Every structure is written in C-alpha cells, then in structure tokens.
Image (tube, rainbow, N blue to C red):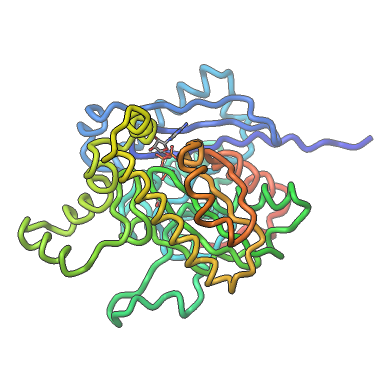
Length: 360
Ligand SMILES: Nc1ncnc2c1ncn2[C@@H]1O[C@H](COP(=O)(O)OP(=O)(O)OP(=O)(O)O)[C@@H](O)[C@H]1O
Ligand SMILES: CCCC(=O)O
C-alpha cells in the first residue's frame, strides 16, 4: 500500500496593514484569513520589530479559530523580507537571516516580520521555517547592474515570489517548463515591477522600491533627476522622507488623491478626463517597461504575463494590449498566488532537503 505523506504547513505573509495567514495540508488550503490592522494600532507600536508579539497573537487566534493544533504543523513558510541580495529558491530561516531581518540592515519593510514570526513559532514547535523567492531575489546580469553612475549600482527588488509562481503556473498550463522559457512578467499592484525571465532567472527587472519603472497607484517610478534634486532641496527632505515621497505619496495618490484604481475607473466612466489621462499615462509607462524587457530577451518572448491586483482591471488590460501585442502572446493572471507558492516551496523542501539553500 502506498503511504501518502501529508504535510501541514502554516504560511505567513505580513504587509504594511495586513497579515495574510493560511494553513495547507499538502496542496489543499484548509484555512485562510487576511487580517487587516488599523493604522492607529500599528502607529502605537513604535518599531516594526515590536509588532511581532501583536501579530503572533493574531496568528494564535487564527489557529485556534480554525482548530489547527500548532503541534501538528510540519513547517512554517513566510514571505522573505529585505535581506542581502540572493538567488531565488527556498531558504531555511537561520540566525544570520534573523539578524538581518530584525536589524533592518538591508531595509525595514513589513515583510521582514514574516521570517521573524515564522522563526519564533518554528522554534517553539521544533519544526523548520522557510522563506522563498524573497523580494531581494537577485539574478541580474552584470550589464543590468549599471546605473550610469559608478557609485550607484542598480539593485533587484521586486515581486519575485508572485512573478515566478505565476510564470511557472502559466507555462505549466501551456506544457512548457519555466527553466526552459523566456517570459516577461508585469506584476501590477500597489507596486509595479516588470521582469525579464530567461531560463528561470530574472535577468533584469524594474526595482519596485528604488524609484524605477512605471509609476503606480502610490509610487513614482523613475523621476527626472534634476527636478527631483531641486524638489528634495526646496522641501528639505531627509532620506526617509524621500522614500515616503516616492513610495506612497506619488503616482495616482499625488495626481488624483487616491490609490484605488477602481475608484479612478468610476471617475473615468463618469467622464473625468483628468482621471483618464492619468490612468492612460500609467498604462503607457508599464507598456514601455514591457518593451524594454523584450529587448533584454532579444525579442524571444514566449508570453507576456500581466498579474497583480491591477490585472483585474478590464480597462487596463484592454488599453495595454494594443501597445504590447506585437511583442508576443499575452496572458492575464489577476491577483497573486504568494501563499500557494510559499506552501509549494515548503512542501518541496520537506520532501527533498537537497533543494534548501543556505543564507550566509
Ligand atoms: N477589480 C479591480 N479592478 C481594478 N483595479 C483593482 C481591482 N482589484 C484591485 N485593484 C487595484 O489594484 C491595486 C492594488 O493591487 P494589489 O492588491 O495587488 O496591491 P498590494 O498587494 O497592496 O501591493 P503589491 O501588489 O505591490 O504587493 C489597487 O489600486 C486596487 O484598486
Ligand atoms: C518589496 C518589493 C516589491 C514591491 O515593489 O513592492
């Protein structure tokens, strides 16, 4: 008789105002919740790391509510935070990673809490904790690292987990293998990143946090340098304030006062020309980035994949297609599959420890 290995995995994905939680038994999601935290509560907890206890309590409540006994978990998997640049794949959370996530050495981001929470929980139950394809996944070619100024190197920070998972899924459906294919993935959500995937590696991508690429519902994307230098000086901005200006106070938020694309579409339908021009400008910029990545892939593009929350938008999809369809087939995969991707990686790591990478 065949013995079926049933592995139970808890997946943790903290965002700036949410904590997404799920439990999987093999590939089946048996419980999930997307908990929203009020800004007031989070603002009262002064540092990012001190949110761990608050979010762990929510996690315990989630497990209890869903009758999941933590002692029966086989592993915990979490979204990877801002770490040193590493190749994609699955990593067991270790002390070096915990140090980098908690110190904020490579940046402070809500996703840093994922690895820290997973480690804490896994330690208590003596099970492994993993992260996979973190946003710092860096598979850039050497030429892609040049910024144009010696002292400043381009970095790879993008929606690596979702980009790779969606590309794998679409290619599987086409009977193709990710590691043998050339695809462009545009993740279009609160952040927008466009990657050139060549034989399983993301050899160039717009950096989502450094001010590159298209503007987004809340971010600036790339800006003209001299006017921005003048803006920084005239507003006497600190580095943190510059960050807030380009990630949060820009894009739709700065032009239209909201990051909600559905609200903007309602305005367009009601005849708001300003809203239409701004939405069309974002679509135009995303299309230009897709064109750039087609050059990176020397025009050998098997499929262009549109994913993320904005891929739900019929308006966006209809208006971007005429700009990019000459480059290749287009597939639309709205939303994201990060929780499923983390479970897949953890299940694979439990079956074959040989795939687990070491973070040093
Ligand atoms: N059905 C829809 N039609 C149009 N826009 C939508 C729809 N659903 C979500 N959006 C828009 O997608 C954007 C948010 O996308 P998403 O939920 O992927 O972002 P996020 O998870 O906060 O950030 P990120 O994707 O960068 O991790 C918002 O502008 C939202 O209004
Ligand atoms: C954190 C990297 C992904 C993004 O651009 O938000």
